[in-house]
Image 1 (cartoon, helix red, strand yellow):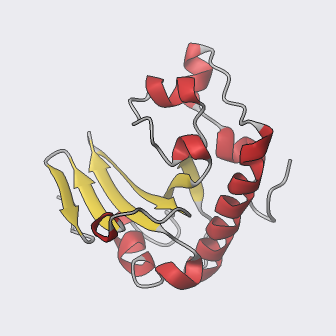
Image 2: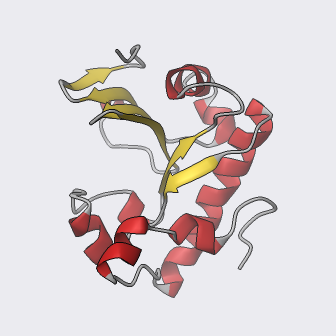
Length: 152
């Protein structure tokens, strides 16, 4: 099922963890409109960056979210978020730095540059956190910092 021109429901629900553990990662029907909104945000990001966006993690069913160690309030489990990389544009730091300047026009409610366990990606969500300090952060193995920080 196509959600937008470049993003499908299958792409936003694909999970190697679900496949490996035999877990169902099908979203409830009431979450599909949120996934459409997330895909629309990803379309705007793709257009702004001028390069294809690869979703490394999108929707997570409760079982998949538990299996990956996600918090129970995860935006992924609610259909609001995607973890992305954009190799055709640049590394995750470069992507996050640019997106942090364009959050409102792109419909990004939260932006997180993540660099943990040797991997790097950008988390984008259509939901705006209650705490303004949680809108733009960098998370590394050492913890969280406000703003987009260079990853070592």
